[in-house]
Length: 157
Image (cartoon, rainbow, N blue to C red; front, side, top):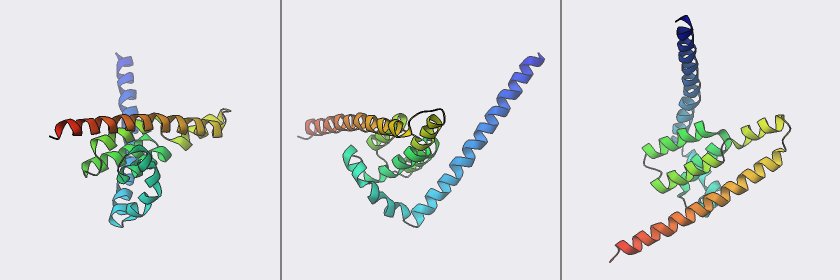
C-alpha cells in the first residue's frame, strides 16, 4: 500500500511540476504577444514572412505563429495558435496547415542542438527537416486549395 502512495505522490508532483513549467512558458508568451499586438509589432514583422504564407496559400497572419513554433517549439507555437484562433485571426485551413507544419518541424534549433551534442550534423538535420516539411505542407496546401475551389464551383449556380 505504501508503494501505491509513493507512486501517486511521484505522479502528482511530476504533473504539478510539468504544469508549472508550461505555465511559466505560455503565460509570458501570451503577455508578450498581447504587447506585440498592442504596439503593432506583429504587423511590422509579418511582411518578412509573406513568402512563406504565399507558398502555402495561408493568410499572412498565420505565418507568425508558424515561425514562432519553428523556432521555439510546439508549446510556444501552440500558445500563439490558440490565441490567434480565439481572436478569429486564423481560419480552419490556416490552423490545420500551421499545426501540420509544426507537427513535422518544430523546435528546429533546440532539437538540432540536442542531436549535434550527440554527434549529429546540424546543417544536414536542419536542411533535410525543413525541405521535407516544406514539400509535404506545400502538397497538402495545394490539395486543400484544389478541394476548396471544387467545392466553391459546385455550390455556385
